Every structure is written in C-alpha cells, then in structure tokens.
Image (cartoon, rainbow, N blue to C red):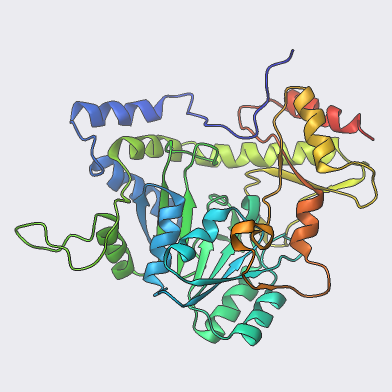
Length: 373
C-alpha cells in the first residue's frame, strides 16, 4: 500500500534551524518558560506581522482566554462568536462564565456573516466581545466586521489560529482586531510542538497579559498575588522550535497555496467547489477544503471512506458550535431560513494539505475523488 498521506503534520526545516536554538537553550540550561528563545520568537513574530506586541503562550486557547480577560469579559456577560469553528474559539468565554451567542457564516468566505452579526446586536444588545475566525486560513470580511465593532465600541478578537501568513488588503490577519490569537499546534502552518501567541495592539495590554500568563505575580520580595493568574507562558525549548520555524514560514505559506492551487486544477469539472475567498485577500490555505454540490450523490462520509481505503487522511469541516451538544441551549443568529454553517458542514471536506506532500501526491488524492464521479 502507498505511504499514508496526512492531513497536516509538523514540518521541521531542512536546514535544522530548530535544533540550533534548542541546543543553545540546553547549553545555557534555559529550559524553563523564560529565556532568549521566547524573547526572540516574539521579536521575530512582530517583525513578520509588522505591528503590535506579541506574547508567546502555551496554546492558542490560552491566547483567546487572555484576550477575553483583557477585553473585560466577566460572568454573565455576552460574547458573540462565529459558529463554524473549532471549540477553542468559544470555550474561553465559557471558562469566564459568559453567555455565548453564535453567529452564522456567509458563503463567500465561510466565516462570520456581518449581516448576522448586526442582527445579533439588534436581538441581544451590545456584547463584551466579538470573536471572528479566519477559517482554514481564509480571511473573514474584516472591513465590515471591524466597522461594526467600532460602531458599538466592542473589542474584536481575531481567532487567527489557522491564519498565520494570511493577508487582507496588505495586512496580516490577526492585526485588525483589538486582540489576535495564533496557534502553533502540531498541525498548524508552523509549530512549536504546542503553543500559541496573543497579539496585542497596546503595549500595556501585552504587559498585563504577560503578568496574567505568569501566575499574576506582583512586584514584591516574596510571591504576592492580588488576582488570579495562569501558567500560560511558552517554554524556552518550544520557543526555540518556533524561532527556527519562523525562518521557513514564508516557504510554508507558498507550499500550502501551491497545494490548494493544484487541487483546484486537478478537480476542475467535478461537482464540487474549493473554498472561495474575497478580493484583496491572500489566504494561507492552511487546509484545502471543498464543498460538494447539492444533489451530486456523494457525501463527505463517502469521500472520507474512499480516501481512508487509499491510505489518505481527510476530515469533515468543523462541526458548528450551534450543533454541538454542549452549546445546545445557546442562541444562534442567522439570516434566512436555513443556517449556512449547517449546510457547509453537511457538504464540506478537508483534504490532505501537508507541506511535505509532493504534487504527485496531491494528484493521487485528486484521482481518488475523480474516481467517485
């Protein structure tokens, strides 16, 4: 049987940059969640995104959690959150005792529908924060979403966990909102094994995030704590991996985009469409995702079963939060009768998008799909 093709897996640099920084940390005995690698990783990220104050953390979820704390989310507050996303976009609001209101998607990006967001303000009043996601690295309608949040003076939290390297109108995703969150999980476009980063526009917010991420210790000659803190700082070892990965990030973005483009060409003419995008947007195409045509006679389960038979990993789209049992009682706001995100979930498939794949392997995946129609 052919080698297994993975959806997305860690891809270390051929040059071994990561090992250089890890060895340096070991030689200096800086294996704690402090050290030169952490500082330099943050500096490299700031240089790459071109603005703001990054804070390296243990996960993207930690970044979202701290963003919500900095946004002032408290028990009983309301948070508006995109429904078609991974649960980590929503869970931190639940940690804080907030009420989540989920917002439907629009079809051109599969991200938060600005019309549904406006309706949510009409129905539920002004929330404490809005969480928008760039699904699979595809930029959301940032012009409209930021304008709505500015009009109501509500912080926009950009969940850019899947969108590092994505660009909208010349600016990197994650830099439009009051806060942005990145993920460096093992399947992301670059990895630190596990890790994330909070992007702050304001230096004081970054300083407060750093304090909260290190157990909220006060300046005192002993361990003094006047508020609840968290153990969220990224380790110096993992940050060393991140420093090395930053050197190949532009290459990884090009590789992901090339995989997507190859699928577009190889699957042309089939009863399906690849994830669309906006004019002025440059998605990183972290995952290449498709939508099967209605009435084509093939379901996502059929596709995934056939791929599995061929030793190829695929995945359903994220199951929307409004369909998740844990959030069954939460409000959901849509435009029109049928939820768009439910339909996308019912017909969508994520294809292997591993940057170690060759174009011949992309064609191998495509041949399986072509054989189904």
